[in-house]
Each structure stands twice: as C-alpha cells, then as structure tokens.
Amino acid sequence: WHPFTEEAIAKIKRDRIEHLTILPLYPQFSISTSGSSFRQLEEMWGKDPALSEIEYTAIPSWYQRPGYIQAMSELIAQELDNSPHPDRVHIFFSAHGVPLSYVEEAGDPYQREIEDCTRLIMEHLNRSNEHTLAYQSRVGPVEWLKPYTEDAITELAESGVEDLLVVPISFVSEHIETLQEIDMEYRELAEESGIENFYRVPALNTHPVFIEALADLVIESIESPSVKFSDVIRPSKRVKMYPQEQWEWGLTTGAEVWNGRVAMIGFIALVIELVTGQGPLHSIGLL
Image (cartoon, rainbow, N blue to C red; front, side, top):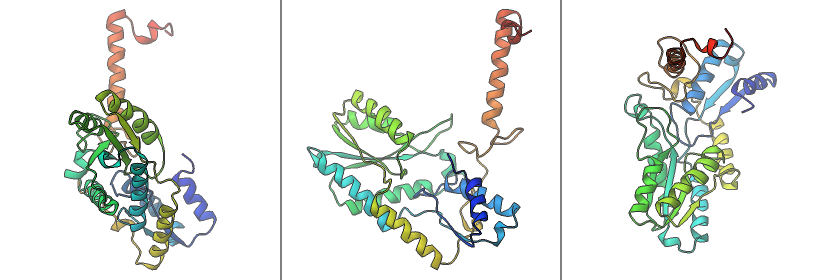
C-alpha cells in the first residue's frame, strides 16, 4: 500500500534529505522481508547518483531491544490477567513462516532470531505458563519452518490444553494475518479441536513503550557507525523467494511460479480442445 518505496524515496529527494535512517518494521531479520527491502534500496542507490549523496544507516533487526521486549511482555501479561485462570493459559507464539531452504541453504538468521526473541519475552514476562512457538502463513509446495501453527494448535488440544493465548510475535500491526488468519481461521480450528478459551494478544500498533523504543533506536543509530547495504546479510545461496520480488520470465528461480501458471493455462486449454473438439476461443464463440 501507499506510499511505495519509490514514492517515499522520491519525496526524500524532493525534501533534500541529507541523513537517512532506514528502519524496517520487522523486528526480526529475514532475507525475504527486511533483506528484500534493503536489496531494492541498494539497487535504487546504484542507479541514482542523487541518492549516493545521502548519508544513510540501515537497521537490520531490533527484536532484542528492551523497549520492544517490555511492550510485548506487558501486552501478554494484560491478556493473562484478564483471563479467569491465568496460570493454566498456554502461551502460543505464532510467527510468520519462511521456507526451510532460506535457513538451511541461504543462511537466513530468521529462525534463530525468532527463537531468541521468544526466549527474551518469556524471561521478561517471568510467568510459569508453558509456551509454544510455531509458524504460520506458508504458501507454495515447499517445506517451511515447523511446527506449522495449525498442526501445533491441534496437537495442544489433543494434549489437553483448554486455554490458549496466541501471540503474533513477528507482526507489529494488525492486518490480514492477525485479523483473519489468527482471529478467525485459527480460532475456528482451535474450537473445533476442543480448546475452550481462545485469546489473542493485540499487535503492538502504537503502544507507547514500543513507539518510544523505535524513537530511541533511530536516535542511537544517528550517533553510531553507519551500517551500509553491503553490511546486511544476503542469501549465501540463490533460492526461490516467496513471494518473488518481481515478475521474471525465462529460466530463473523467481520466474518458476509464473511460468508454472502459464503452463497450467496451456494445459487447461489443451483439455478443453480434447473434450470439445475445438479450441477454447472457438468454444466461447470468439472464433
């Protein structure tokens, strides 16, 4: 949604900005999220001499920031204390997933940072509740980080968990993956599986402690040595990105999805011709 990166950069140039802090709203780094944005910016910097005059620093990840951990812990504690039986609530961290190949083949630190973030939050929360970490929102035919959120929910229900509190750990604002996927789809799955009470921690949104933590991070970055695009982790091996960063044609990894769709359309057209005796344009009266 607007403003797109190109629109924001155009405004930065128009306003004659001289110093820039690039702060992704992803707490944990992944080559497919923050990494994708940094690669796009690096390409723009390489093509535009005017941008090369801007001093900038990049902030790859910030999940370990005390203010972020505190804000997450406060939201979790608030939901726990509002439940009838706080001690028996199972805390369920649900992070956006990535393909397993990103971690095992391309060196993506995302899984390690998510696990470390979960540990830091639980330590700060200092509650005796059991907790689980799982991954949601997978697409495509490849294997993604496990356990998958839907599988973990059913397994917890089978083990006797009755009170479940879902924490969207990799999302800082409400959107379709919290409002639809968690609040509706996973809630329905949990209730059908036998979980009696399904709670969800709200996203950070404009939580004052969270906003202050971001502000402090930007201020500190101005006073620290600059981090350049070349310093940011990039894939150590070429892997197919989900979703692809741009439409590509030919024998490229990013093109596989779209090339496959075109091939499927051609296959469907062949089936129609075999069944009807004429091509699809003939069958609908266009030829």
